[in-house]
Image (cartoon, rainbow, N blue to C red; front, side):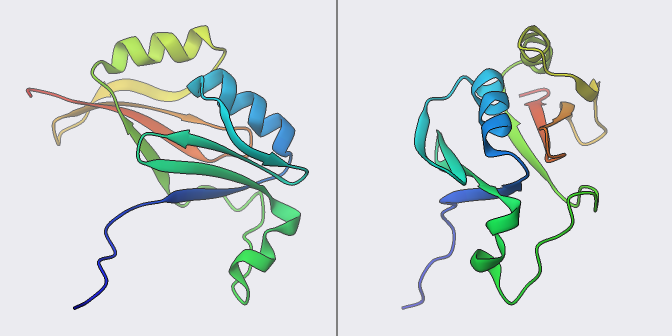
Length: 131
């Protein structure tokens, strides 16, 4: 029987300054710290862990693949489902988070807004429309 590969356990993001990222994630998501050491900090979301690991020590996790340069630009986005994108955006603004865009209705039936963490990892809040 094949091993199912359908359960996301953790998202590991490489960051420049774990302390700065920790402050952002605590303020933005209001999550308690699950684990922390000198080079990393982890938070528990529903169904997955967000693990922030200092970029200069991340190569051992993915060798022989290289760690992308910090200024390489975003190549992916993480989406959090919400009941109201407008309410989530107001909440984010109250927490000092600047939006990259939105909220806006997308042609595929979702209202979205995007923001970035201190290292440029892009997050999106998304509300299913017409549901």
